[in-house]
Length: 329
Image (cartoon, rainbow, N blue to C red):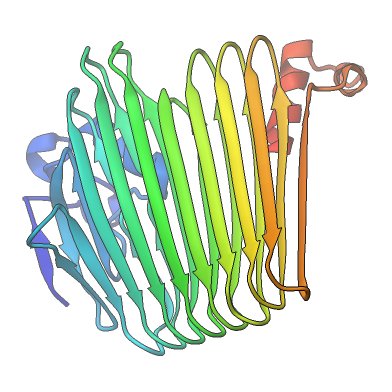
């Protein structure tokens, strides 16, 4: 098992060390790690933790090797064929105002492997300059491999500098491969342009669940493009979103059926206050045996739902929040 690190030590099972001088990470970064990756102790197995534009600590395991790139910022993750039941953590945290970075992470998933990858980015901006993380994640999934990919984006901080994230996820799934992607952004990101593109070969499957909430004057764009090139391939893309106050959201989904395949894309959104939402689904079939469906719905919370919960003792605001929480689960 190999490690590369910048004085990032933990206090065993009791959690992260309380002081920056002991752990190499400040309390804001520790809070962000808990929010985006559920980490309060050092994970087992392979991981790469990036903090304020540099690697805080990196560790490989017997079956998962993580190697730093030499030409650009980022890492290569190699999962050995046949690897089972491993979880790999690659979170990014930023607690300094004014950092802007572009990171390239490539995932090479060997045949018949089955792994979970916990990614995500958290920004705590207490300053006046914008903090921005742009990440390009490329997945190369070999025959029969399965990947669950979880990314959570979170922002906080009392400063007026922007919290900006622009993630791109590029996926190539080989024959009989499977990828499930869970993307969550519920709080604090001022601007984001999220792009996901996937190409599927024979009997490959790509499942996406997006949960998104914006408020204030935040802006979010989500763009999905799935090419079903192999016979028997399939995709299911579902987005659930809530837009509050003066925020804006745009959902773009394109599914192309170039072979006998099945594709479904769906966007359900709750609009509130003075928010604006656009849903732009597109399906295109170049094969008579392609079966493609798109659905989109935008609407406000029905008054009867709030009244029903108020009869149980909740205030109108509490009822509204409970409805939103249930919608985004």
